[in-house]
Amino acid sequence: MDDLTVHLGDYDLTADNETEHQARKVSRVLFHSHFHPFLLANDIALLQLDRPAAASDTVRPVCMPSADGDSYVGQKGTVVGWGITGFPTGDPSPTLQKLSVEVLSNFQCSRVIDDHVGLGMLCAAAPSLQGTCFGDSGGPLTVERESGRNVLIGLVSYGVTGCAVKPAFPDLYTRISEYTKWIDVATS
Image 1 (cartoon, helix red, strand yellow):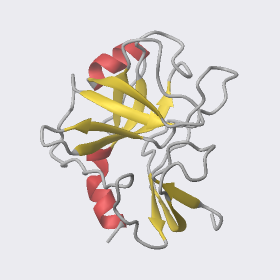
Image 2: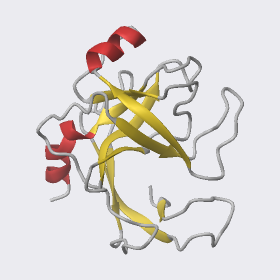
Image 3: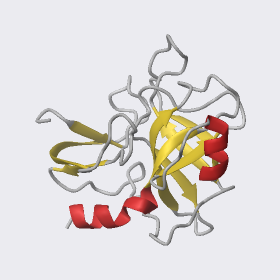
Image 4: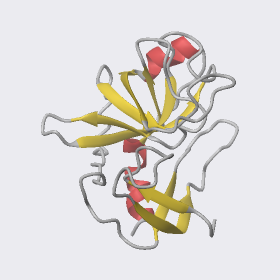
């Protein structure tokens, strides 16, 4: 953990100076105490930076969701990451990839994937043969509000079939609204 560094504002990982990015060391990692590696329940952790990030054109905060339980069902979201672009033999993307997805209800998702989807999870699917893959885990799923602000509603957790091998098949995300109290306590 001592060697963890977070790079903020990067877009192209093969270019050193394509954006004005910021590097921060990680001073502490906070894992959820009830994380279950087999079920991927409570699949969330927080990284504390050694010093604050500076807001810029390429580094901005994302809004946290309210804990009121908005389901986001039917809303369009955006997921980003540098994960592999082909399965099973793809390479990580050198540039940040962006994908539009639609949030499904947990009930609908559980019927599609034929497995239980817990309250701490959220499902979203792209309309085509696209989705998250290895290297995208922990990446953000956001929705844009009418105000133009982006709200973090999920973190990439896993894909049931492994990297978008079925058209419009959902990927699973950690539902942030279920963890807002844990985040508040862990960061205070």
